[in-house]
Image 1 (cartoon, rainbow, N blue to C red):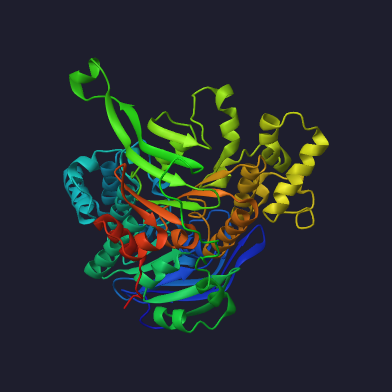
Image 2: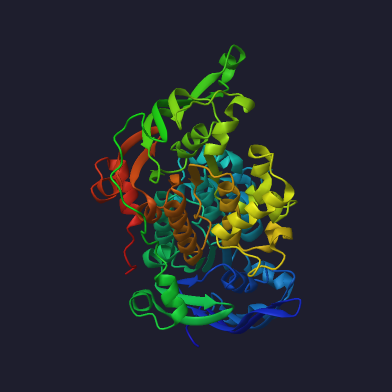
Length: 541
């Protein structure tokens, strides 16, 4: 196919003789933005990374023709490793999903960009450093000279992602492979990164192959979309055409996976001490070192939550939204008694005492479900041990048989049974998918029969179809068990599906609160207006 920057034909990728990508044909035009979408395990990332042979254990077959500056075409899959090193980073660059793991923690951000410039462009050290600072400035990082001397852990998530984009652009590539570049970012940061990529793509005329499961991102960014399912390319076309008239059932399923509201709506009680959870003027302060000589004589303070007042009644969901650093997770930790706080905080009519023995009854009232179940579930414990652990603390009189029966019931409540998973109780977390592990985490929290579940970004790491299933499960459990939810999220669609009331946090302050429809449909505070606007994604022109 003439005029194509990249053209893959019959691409097949196998691991240990088992094929995971089956004869994919894919093409990218010069200056085009193509989105490759699908759920986890669909083969989209394997397809993209195999083009540069970045999967050492994979067996790759087929052809991947790349057009050079002079119009010559080379098959990437037929190049030697030495020849490929000249292509990687210079003609084709990659932005990886998680910059914190992709960036070297032992070197400053500037030094890592300088290394690319010296290897790919042959620039002398002083010129390379000046160019590295300019690249950071081009990506919109404030104080680029100072940030260039910072280590990755000293930057925010958005700044790390911008630094990785600067590093990818250092070799002036003609094709950029972006693997889930906005997954871990807040909705406003996500919009900023997309706008940045759009601007850089237009300015430099490069093509972008975006790998993602985020359909909002596809609508906003891409010209064309290609859909993968189980290693097969099932549909492709212009974004507007595919989203308005999807032909394949799998594409229709992805598009129809927007969260649905299925909660028992009720008018929330007024802000008073009658609710299950009540806070007034809640304040959380961290001790921090002072700079310079002042640090010798005492430590400073950082106020993470400033005077937060809220009320949550039984059977209701209070949504807490805000960007990273807004204080929403700190608020959740204070509610759980895991951080000391000032002001008033009452849970089921009682306050945290700061004593493990005295606080044990309240630990049963409030349980938590974290964002990433794989890191919150011990890989050394079986399902029976993980889910039943709370019973050993809160109901020690139960014998082994009674505990096992309660574990089975909790698992059945979240849709996991022995009929589906033979030997379920003896399995380990790594034997389950992401959505199934989140169900395990919910069962683990439910088994002690809490009144309140704190949900900290419970679906942000999940595919759209799995997210819809988990939200449906949480809605059913709320109806059946009368649970109250404190839902921490930056996803406005999740808030619309789940919340009765909403509070909006910025820099530790509650800037707006009220009924869900009031806050999201007619936001009063400029910050809330920006959050809602950033979640409203038009189809890319």
